[in-house]
Length: 145
Image (tube, rainbow, N blue to C red; front, side):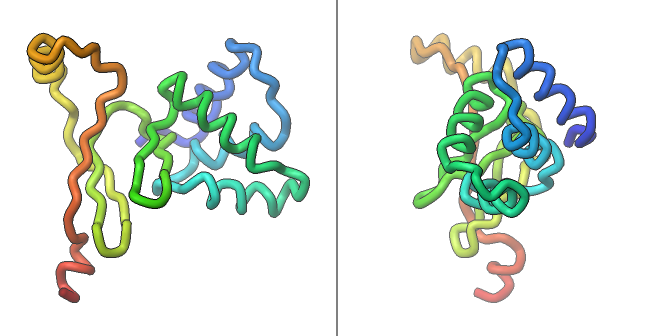
């Protein structure tokens, strides 16, 4: 996990480099992403920002997240009925998702670049955004099952 203040400044700098208009609402969204220790949804981010900026629109959240995803600064984790975002650690890494409570935990291992290259060579694909997800039961749900 990156240091939140350093991550915040890194994302802001990259957005400024793209001449992205940094409104107070967008700056707050970037701050929330940078300090997040979990994997918030767009709705959760919107609800937090709306407390401080009541006129904030859903569109601003989704547009900013889409741009950050395009810039490889957030990783979108697609759940069955929602997406969650990992902006504190956007580098490729596995996620473990509980099928019962939807808790998401970062896997503490790096994705092997050599393995990705072999997969590209064998498939002909150019892998742009590798993402590995493991589904199972978290320790709490496993214990209660």
